[in-house]
Length: 388
Image 1 (cartoon, rainbow, N blue to C red):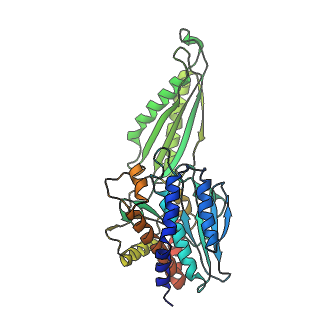
Image 2: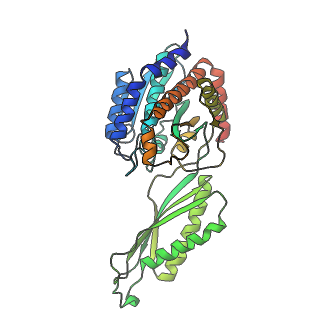
């Protein structure tokens, strides 16, 4: 039996159904943790295709579609993202990621009974800021998954890249109100915040290359003639590893301590969004993606990008099981990420071609792992060595 052809045909024969879901999500964008319509849409389709689905899985807008052969074999998961951005909608292409994940899962289901194991399609919401994958990783979802894979739309095709760890920290400052003409009776939380902001900026030259500090003054008072009793800052500390991101955070906390001592104020810190780990690259899976792209006629495929860029909750997955996070080109390089133009590309002809090629590639990688337990062992051995 030609299992490869079955997979290729499955995707092609159902591409209109997948693109209809991509279109629906494009027209009805939902931001992180509010993707209830997308969860219903994707889960209901998987149910129709013979998957057992659970909605509200771990997080309110998460889901899992499971097809169990009830025979021994690996558990292979395809990951779906489907949160949109404010103003630009699906400017990061997560609606297409969802279509790719569903298509790959359904295609693999067509052949998995011949080998054994389970196929999972995981709905992982709120990638942009609340980290659905992080919540799922903490809940143990990936502890018994042999491989987890996804492909992200982009302006280039690629087999993966490192991401930065991200530590999101909120600084809150507490002083004492007073009339602006009697400032000696008060203590300015805004002064403490501004001094902290300036001092953190001065630390930039003393941190390692390839790290980033992004900060804003979130609250700074309500009236010009009132000494502010409350102010706040919000920061992202990004670094190649979480360990170093936390070292940068400690330097920033020391800045706040000094500012509060100088202004007779106090402060506290909190984690205001979901921290993201860096991504552990599984080179075996990345090279398998390169091979499949070659077979499918995907040209100009970038190698693994070793310079960490951006942050993603796929990092949490990569510390729990072998993970693949590839890219598929759907737009020219002058199209910017997180833009309306990128969102429009997801429903274009190039978007459809990207969905077909990416989902076929993922399903074919999974087929190789089913056909060759030795290859799966190589993947898993590399993972174990990488996270030691």
